[in-house]
Length: 118
Image (cartoon, rainbow, N blue to C red; front, side, top):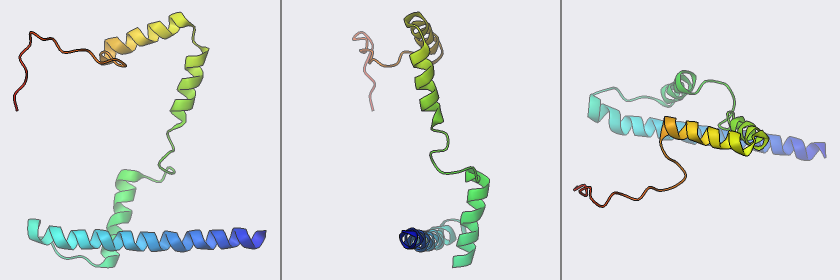
């Protein structure tokens, strides 16, 4: 039992490293293909591409967890919605419509308005 878990962990780490290595090569290849010709920038090495990925993760992605870290709002909204009375739900819908415009239904276009031309 423990051997299977260890094997799965090792396999996960190996595939993660392979994926990360391939992703770094893709970034390096795209950089070296585009940036020198477009902007006159220098060609970069594998390690510089890896550093660029880490820098982008720090600046734009942070280290706060995986891609689904903020999906709790759906569960919380569902709980709030189920606790609302029908009057509260309608009041909520009206407030959302006043802020965001109509949603949930498609408004048919006015036939008197001219059609946009491309």
